[in-house]
Amino acid sequence: MSRRPGIEIRIGLGSCCVASGSREVYDALLRTIAAMGANATVRQAGCVGMCHRVPLIEVIEPGGRRAVYGNVTPAIVPAILERHVKRRSPVYTVGRAWSKLTRDEAWQKVNGFALDPATGAPAEFLGPQVRIATAYAGQMDPTDIAEYRRFGGYEALDRVLSKLTPEQVIDEITQSGLRGRGGAGFPTGRKWSIVRVQPAGPKYVICNGDEGDPGAFMDRMLLEAYPHRVLEGLAIAAHAVGADEAIFYIRQEYPLAVERVGLAIAAATAAGCLGRLKVSIRQGSGAFVCGEETALIASIEGRRGTPRIRPPYPAESGLFGCPTLVNNVETLALTPAIIRDGAAAFAAIGTASSKGTKVFSLTGKINRGGLIEVPMGTTIRTIVEQIGGGIKDGRRLAAVQIGGPSGGCIPAELADTPIDYEALTGLGAIMGSGGLVVLDDSDCMVDIARYFLQFTENESCGRCTFCRIGTKRMLEILNRIVNGHGKAEDLVELETLAHQVKSTSLCGLGQTAPNPVLTTLKYFRHEYEAHIAGKCPAGRCMSLVDYRVTDDCIGCTICAQVCPVDAIEARPHQRHWIDMSKCTCCHMCVLACPEDAIRVE
Image (cartoon, rainbow, N blue to C red; front, side, top):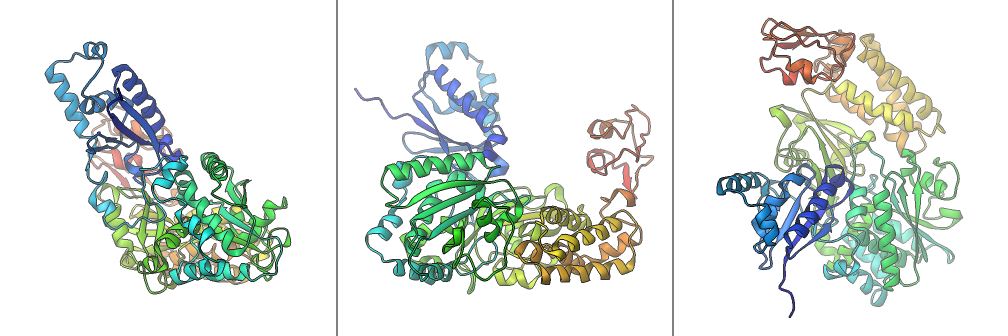
């Protein structure tokens, strides 16, 4: 007699989820199910995007009823399962013989973990989103090719290999209006056409997975959660341009992405999905400049990863001197849907010049952070206030840093700006690969500019004089300003250097590295002037602030308990004092004080 269907439990085991404790929850699920003797299976799922609610599990009962629980801990797992598993082992039942009161208290606690069973998330979070690159989020096992096929996977590639000519494929991509999601926004169809018309001979296609922006994790999550989708897009691109070899270039810091892409390649090859296409993986060593395609190609060839002068462009002379197509992870993840559903469906989404959707990693001072996918043209305000749930701790939005370390800081008063390539460029920012960091009124914009410039200055390959030396001089000026030694003429010199670095650098790193400085000078110049006058309005720059405990202090010692550097001695029932020689201006004491007795001066 066949066994009756049991419940199915899905849990995300991507690197973000595992870092938040999902592996421990997964193990607790297996242990508890075994102890119960329950008819239940636990399956790994891809990224659900709700990073603020992981560990997250979804329970699907045989009748199709769904229940979703967020921020789950191993301790709450038994109570969750007891809500859904009707038949349990007698041994387990005796061992868990609670009183009705205890059981009701446990189940009431479970209610605090439960999310909307219809959506698995607040409607505000999912409402503005349109999922194409991240379609079927949380529903598929990333490494299961049969499951990927069940959701329409490889249908587009099958059609390309059996029914469409390369020219028809390129025309479909062109008509869709897809632009490269790596940052520059170059029309994808045009790029493919250039490689296609090159003389016969070896050609290569490269998936650029060298994501290195601080606070960005779009490519990593796409590779971890949808490796077959990206692989299918890569295979479609290879057929369209006439390449017989394709390469995934993934940074070494992404071991789970490397593992899952490797499994996808093996499964697709064994299933005959890829035809004659040979696909391999090369790992980068984490140099930010290798996100630039000529530096990436140099790295694959075994040389130092530095950009070269163009032309010739890689589409004409790239890997080993052969025509080479380099596309970003997200660009390839969007490709199968365009071929399967038609160019018109994709082009109907977005703005006149920026079609389709864009994946962002939403981070910073936000209540609901995570991986989101929204139509081009969605406003910054919609992302921050509706999807993100507003600013943490009731503070005020100051700016959004968009486009990674080479992006720009867009102030709160421009939050109604639609996100597309032209609108962002007009404000002095860039789309970039999709990092979106929300800043509140406790952030010092001068220090934010210094932080991002410090990153790009350190990551400069050193080939261009202005990038190598100019960014260093700019950083020296910013250091002087935040340390209280700035002068009015520093702002003129800083702006001049920024424009010189932008106009004389060889690659995108140097050309965009000054963006955080230029945008903060444009929109937050008053903060620079305040620093030069000896004040940090946000109270973040150590040399310009003093933390003082007022007479309202009741000696509760909470500030001393939260201070990470022991700058406050715990003196119960006495007014406390802060040792500024130790203080790092982390602001923890200010946030923790119940009497609002700590002033930043």
